[in-house]
Amino acid sequence: MPFTSSPSPLELVLGAALEHAGVGLVDPDPLPSLFTAGDEALREIEQLEGEKARLEGRLLDAYATLHTVMELQHEMLGISRGPVPVEADTVVTQEIAFATGVGSAEVSRRLELATTPRRHRMLREARARAPSASTARCGW
Image (tube, rainbow, N blue to C red; front, side, top):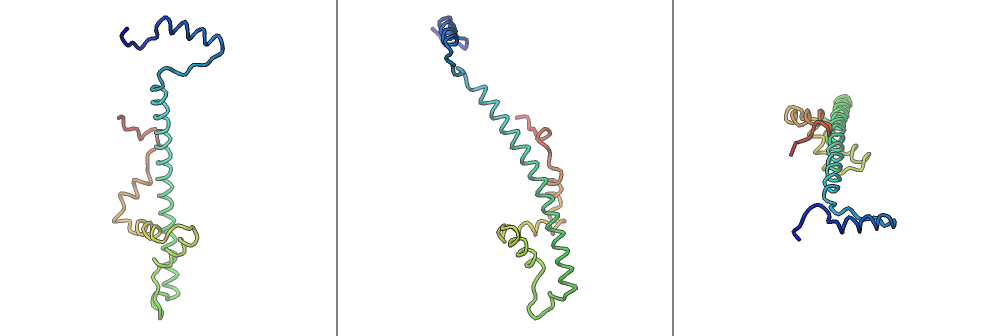
């Protein structure tokens, strides 16, 4: 008998008898449910990535604010001109790294991104307006 997608009469009778006996059957074709599960997981990832991008944009703004404040403190206290000059970037990087546990190399990278708005303006704007999952669908 050639392969068909519909169950044979014997399969229907056997399935009905097993169901009547209380035996649950596994879906004969799990592929549609796997596609649905995959789509749901992808939608959740898209939503979380959008939320993460918006949060990272806010985080970069906070980095830039702290950098500005520390730079002003350095100028007022004359720390940059002292016997052992210390740059504001170094102090900010260490402050954030110690406070958060994030590595100083990663903090330094983020601080550069936060304080170089002309260079990274397009990236920061894209992160700030990251689309939600409903508008980020690619259609493929």
